[in-house]
Amino acid sequence: MRAMKLLIVALAFLFMPFPARAATQVYCMPLATLVQGLTEMGEAPVGAGTIAGQETRIVLFASEEKRTWTLAGVDQSGKACVLSFGTGWNASIPITPAESK
Image 1 (cartoon, rainbow, N blue to C red):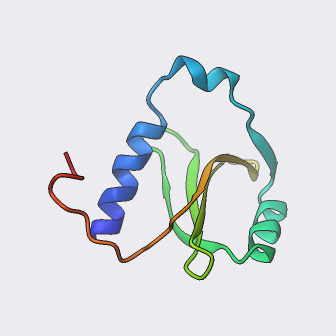
Image 2: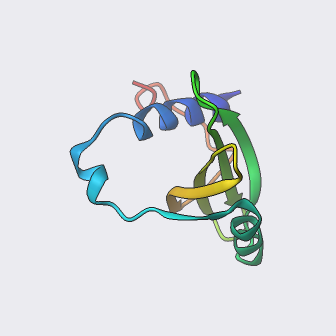
Image 3: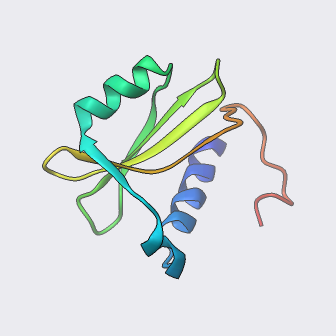
C-alpha cells in the first residue's frame, strides 16, 4: 500500500507543468520494443495505472537486482514513451512521515 501511495505522489509531481519539461528529450517506441529492451536490462513491470481523466496508462518497470527503474506512458495505439528513469530502486523501503510531506 505504501508503494502505491509513493507511486501516486510521484506521478502527481511528474505531471505538474514545468517549463523546463518542454526542452527534455522524450524517447518513444512501440510498447513491445520498450518491454524487450527493459527485459534485457533486467527490468520488469511492477505496477501500472491509468491517468485520471485520460486514456494514457502509466507503467513502472524496475529491477530489484540492479536497483534501476523506468516510468513509461503508453497511449491507446501502444506507443510507449519513457518519462523518467533512475537508480536506487527499493520496493520495500518504508516512507517516514518527514518524507511524505
